[in-house]
Image (cartoon, rainbow, N blue to C red; front, top):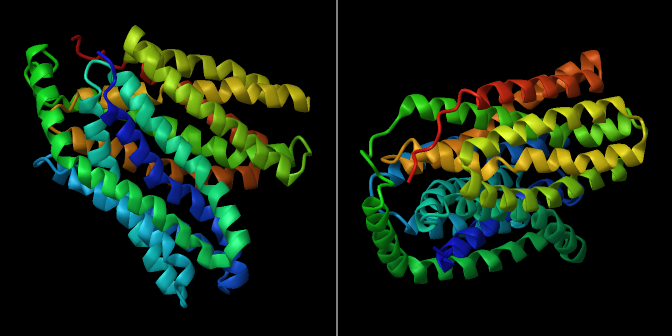
Length: 386
């Protein structure tokens, strides 16, 4: 079965939704300079959008499972882009805060229904379908800062208005696709039933709990790498701040490729083997990174680390969804939304370890989480065979 055009539509929607999340940190220096807000206030804007987005996604996923609500995706994209676009036009900090929260709510609306729809329209190729969907988020996070930097330099803080245009275009495309998308989803659901994908169609909460636990662990590792790799490059390897930031760009680019490759591998080899392999292979590369002081070697090691970090992503999401066939939207909300909060909430504790014991100690804690992820990967139940 070939991937339908709706799989690429879901990928496009994910790009558009997550562009705003990637762009927000990039506009903070401009808001501080031109909007006269403090560093604490700037951090509050990130908290507004990320917490609202992550914590609301399970709730919206639960509501989405009550019926067919593809319109939520269109509304989510519209709110994500519009909320972000008006940040630069707010005269007060609380106006900016409210706009950031609206943008976060839009992201929360899109992801659960988007994840559920991407899963269904992928048909037999669920690994690749969720891989493309996940890669869309990675691309959005990568493009967001680039676009924000150009528009802020060109137009000042009112350059946030640019983000309204892709949002409205993609929103219209989704609205125009709702009717045919519903028909396609009903057809796909019927085919899946005939081929036995639904089986008894009962939620397996025990298996879902084990599957989602590894999603949470991986979120902690991912956040830790995002936070501590640039700091490690500066504080331990003695490189410049710009050099540390470039390393995140490298990891992001590798992550997009790895997410797609992981989806393809999951369809061929199964979800659990890909999850297990990614977790096992990350450990030796992390150990080598902590042992080397050579800049070139350390930089090259980031490539397999980023690959192993991202290659299990689509398999983890698809596996988690497979255990809640009656609540795929809720599963999507937890795995795509709440997991982000878990990683973000643990990061300050990791920072405290770095403050007290040093950056190397914090990196070794990440290594410890990677070992835990390997252990959990060996108690994961296998996906249902089709």
